[in-house]
Image 1 (tube, rainbow, N blue to C red):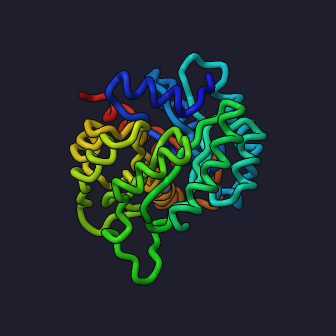
Image 2: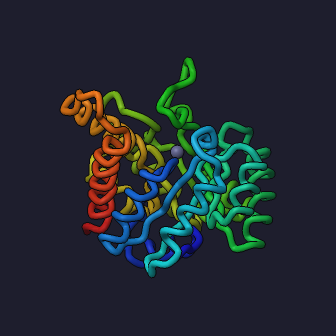
Image 3: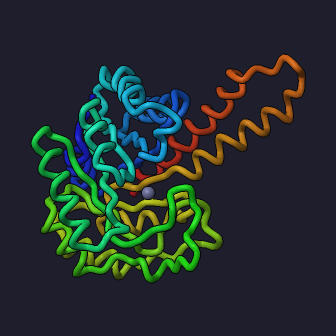
Length: 282
Ligand SMILES: [Zn+2]
């Protein structure tokens, strides 16, 4: 059953837990996430990023997710991740996404508020939730702009209040020491800042870049009000590792692409299950 982000995060708050948002960009990743959710009977967020438009048409992704997830009783969100273009947000809403993230975090605050507010107005009119972002994170593929300094991009409490109140968003993604991609060391999250932001705004907080953040730190973040955690790198790199291992074992000329994909899908499925289980632990 498809629900919007607001509904699933309300459930998460009642349960004092967070819901995993896992990136999907093809059939294998969709099946891996959907089957993990169904096997564990737990809600999940399937997240397709604007950056994946070169991998698959968004309308096709929406059709597949709907076909697989709609008949089940388990609440599932079909979410648009990191959209910078207004047209991508409109395309997602038109083809049945139940939630969209508008990422105007690179813009001056006033402009980010104005753009997000416009999207909230349209999305809410048709029951679609909106996630916004404040603070500056590195690129989604894990790369950094030259001179990128993580601390300088941290979300400020006052800006978070101004942004949340000024836009009407349903969830706020923050930068508190989290980053996309592979961490160089063990990431240190600014829990004081997280606690202050969470207490100051009335919408749930989202943490991106959770691959590589120790379980204990994720759980602490959840205890401070994080209700959605985004995981991609660990799943994606795990799928490549599985493909590599498969190819080492299968050097014959008749090795089949579709058989290799099964190995990758199995690894993605296991990783997603581990995250869902971890998020359900108290
Ligand atoms: Zn992200």
